[in-house]
Amino acid sequence: MTASVVAKPLLTPLFFTLLSFMDPCAGLQRITEHSVPFIWATSGGGFPGRAVATYLARTHGPEMGSKGKPGKKAPHTSAKGFGPPPPPPKTFEEVCAEFKSRLPRDEAEPCVCGSGDSYSNCCKPFHQGEKIPETPESCLRSRYSAFAYRIPAYIISTTDKSNSEWQADKVKWARRIDREQMFDSFQFVGLEVGELEETSETEKYLSLRVTLQPVDQKTGMQTQPEPMVFLERSKFLRSSKGAWLYSAGEVTSQAVGFKGRTLKDEKDLDAMRKDVEYAKGIIGSAAAGKSNDETL
Image (tube, rainbow, N blue to C red; front, top):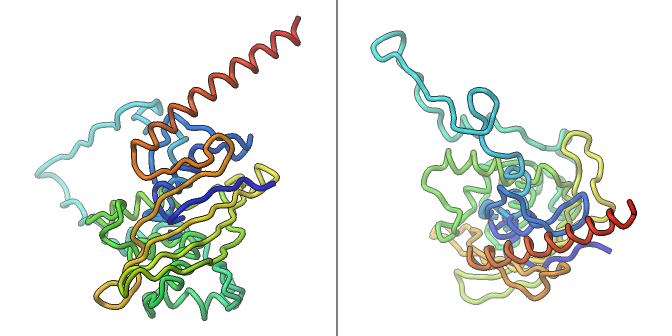
């Protein structure tokens, strides 16, 4: 059976945080020392997304100091008045150009968004700024493929200012998405677009279903036999220029231990963390007891 989760915008921070509670290898919910809210996701995640990706980056530990040990960064020294002036800071475009990508080698192959059309005729024009998402679905699909292909710049350009992940400093935002929210430990299996709710001419909600397969980043091998399935209900707003942008959402997990719980803010996440730690303690005690019995 697949792990089933119900979420609003897959591309929301809460979506990513939810994944941070799950151990892809053991198939159990967990929380790590450095797991702090994303989703999905959308990264201001419509596939929308930060919970899933937080799992990837925050489990590597604190920053390393000058001697390779956890601690503070080595102090920056500069010799004022000597040598050439420091280079100007990199632009947003230059920073994004340095990120690795997963773009298809053959743009004629079917787009990962599931439309059935080729990438060159489907989401590529959106990603390159040649077209704007004129419907919530086109925004959703193009954002999903942007996560799959690792295109942080597009995630930023299609995130509304009302989203909790929105930042004025786009360079800092892009680096954060690249570091924490690009689903590098997952294979994008599929996207299913569901019901559209039209609340007004400038606000709509869209349901979706996303399937991700946990994999090893180095080998690409699956780290658990079954994929993870997520259901979302994402909120989209239309900008003054006519483009639909990802705004917000919430995550409701149907996984064992979290059924019926809704994640809307930090308070909900803190409550879940406490429950997870409590469950981990019980599991650890039971495992230790079993080990002692076997030894005897």
